Amino acid sequence: MAFQQGLSGLNVYSRALDVVSNNIANASTVGFKAAQAQFADVYAGALNGAGATQVGIGVSLPVVMQQFTQGNIATTNNPLDIAINGNGFFRLQKSVQDQTGYYSRNGQFYLNRDGYVVNSTNGGYLTGYSSPDGVSVDSSAIVPLSVGTGGIEPKQTGWSSVIDASKGGLTVSINLDNRDKKAASIGSGSEWTQLTPFAWDSTFNTSMYNYSTSATIYDQSGASHTLTNYYVRQGDSGTDARTWNVYTVIDNRYLVSTTPNQLVFEPNGTLVGNPGDYRFQLDLSATVMQDGTPMDLTSDAGLNWFAQRPGVSGNFAFYMNLGETTQFGMAYNPDNITQDGYTAGTLTKLSVDEAGYVLGNYSNGQTKLMGQVVLAEFINPNGLQNMGDNLWIETFASGQPTIGMPSAGTRGKLQSGAVEESNTDLTQELVDMIIMQRNYQANAQSIKTQDQILQTLVNLR
Image 1 (tube, helix red, strand yellow):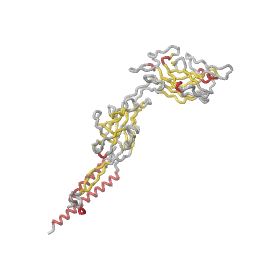
Image 2: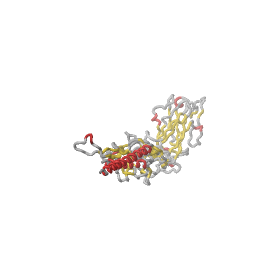
Image 3: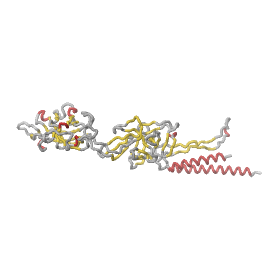
Image 4: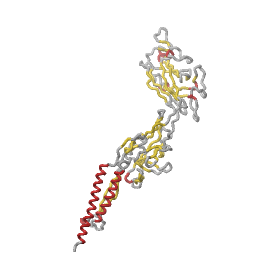
């Protein structure tokens, strides 16, 4: 009798319609992966086999296979929304203490009240590598990602625990015009103009120097100050014409050492010796006021540079690099002026780059590394067990995850301010729905036909 075959068809295609309906219901679920019903025929077992006369006894639905194809990427207005373009999964934890791993393709994240990055649909804590120093990540442990929402402390220009001539400080790259005919000392009958002697107790004016450059520097409290270099050509001929004194002044009130630094050039306009020879240490302990008296570095209220922050033992010195200075026959030009200090800042923006680095941008223009998102990859993702809420857990069939940074292998790249849409193809699902409906009707019809045949047999006399 064909009742069994027809009944199996009704059961299987009813479940197949459930699969299609579930796909359609999740057409807008971020990170959802559509499933596909896969069928198998059923035969009664026989030790000797039935040969060419064997007739099947119906159909079964042995597996519902999820399709881990890439969904479309849609942009959002949340910088913590993250889309995966590849095979990886976000690794989540239920809590900070519970280290059990859950996996998801849903990249809708936000900061909770404790500063952790959590998933908006299931509350899972996004995990990755931490960044203790704000510069590099610690890849020795996978932890819930925490983003400090507080501000960033100020940094003194040239600050380090030990003054290092190869690190930090101020860099000034300029060209001093070789054609400039003003000097501190000139010979009799010279066509050059003699400069007024550089006198610290006088009002600065252009008759005292050839050129000046200004740069903003920062003290330990984050207050800004103006550092000005005054460049004075020493003579009108010979070595003196290729020698420049550099007087450094802070806030036009404090002279950093009464002994100027000096630049000496070759006839071709490049510096004599090595560029490193012109990385000068500015010893602020030698700073004098306009009347020539030394300044008390620990108590002067007019220059907060020297005010110590609690717990910070700052140096009263930093390096100024003039090793890129030239003396060519071209117009004076400050090519580049940079320094490594900054004032205090507040967090204004978070972003995640394609390698998973979580970056914090601050109001003072600084960027700090907060951590790095990791991705998990499975040999057999179809072996994962679906837990609902866009979560999967590993099983023996899926194999253990390989966890690492994005962009490595086939885990995929990340896109901030975007999410991966459901990979449900509505057109295909609607067509499949029609097919499953027709198959269901056909199986019902086979049961009806078998019933009519049986009725005819019963009515025989």
